[in-house]
Length: 99
Image (cartoon, rainbow, N blue to C red; front, side, top):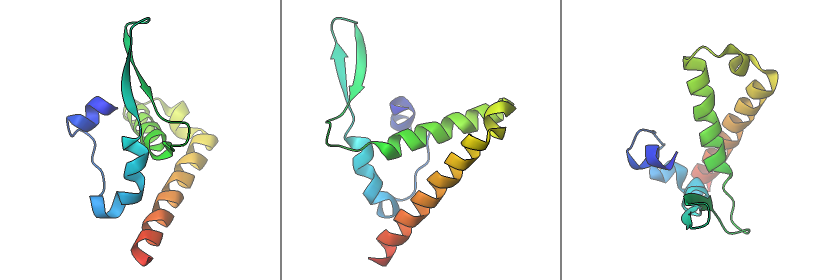
């Protein structure tokens, strides 16, 4: 996900429209784990990263849909989660525009 963001392969709303969600992306940091010899992504316990996970999940659904994996696309739980994500994002954008 972070590589796709760095390469500008994911499109995001304008900064002015998504300012409240940016902290949920930048709170995650990459830490090299010497023992396992890999990069681990982590964040402080007090930070939220819900927007990051919602974006990653939405991308996974889009990829699955493009590849024809209909079980993901047709899952009632998946559809409900995607509707909920859209409602939360629209509500947050509306609140930011109103206040």
